Image (cartoon, rainbow, N blue to C red; front, top):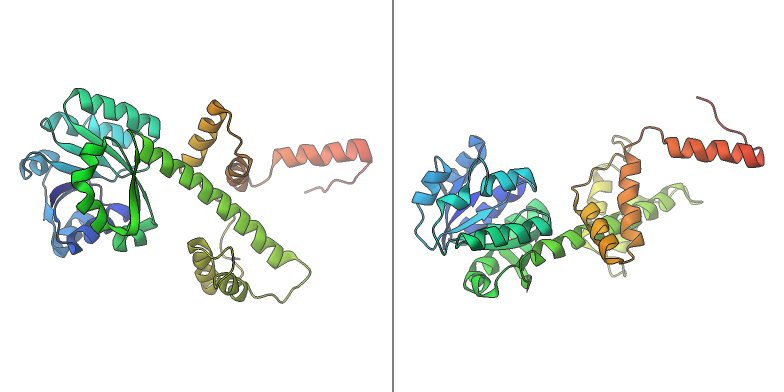
Length: 302
């Protein structure tokens, strides 16, 4: 296929390399010039502007975006850049970023009013997956999705893409996926804390992770990544336990509250991330002083 591509960050650039490997012709545009030059050197084509990219494609155009969720994506579609306003009826926009599914539903409707098709494609696998085979969760109109199956098939790992439902469904499934990922990582973190701080002081993190990666029930891609991380730094003394989040777990918890769905493990994992950013927890100070008040337990001064 010949398609346009917007956004050459860690995921986007690797996805474009993947597409070029599979003989797709890419017309790329990016705000920063350096990644764009890398794509050109690899065999892609450069657009000097969004208008130039649109001109280099014939209708029905297919344009894949891989941008930061929220304002950046909104500005690209309908704001400052107004990509949607440059397109013709029947053209297709693919949002491969981590947009909120409610935004994707709204954007689908707005594009539909303009005669433009919109697919939301939740993308998992990290930069490595984008490069060698991603996992794609696709929402939108099935009749728009089906002609693009050859594209999705070539950039995905084997059996790694599915049409999951109507507008927003792709980003909804990816949102929940990321919240589950938080839960997995929190359980792993607590498990390795037990290995490190439990009664056996000579346990080897790399060996434990390696054993768990070979036939155990918790064998997984995340466990393989943990094994690799411990090979690089077995004590993790060089880093802080400060963990950011990308917003998707928060959206999951908010949606769960709206629909009264119990997701206690996912909520715990998210709140633990928030807690990791506190140098000193005021909440735990309150707990400490309450223990002193009711039980006479000692508190520690600074």
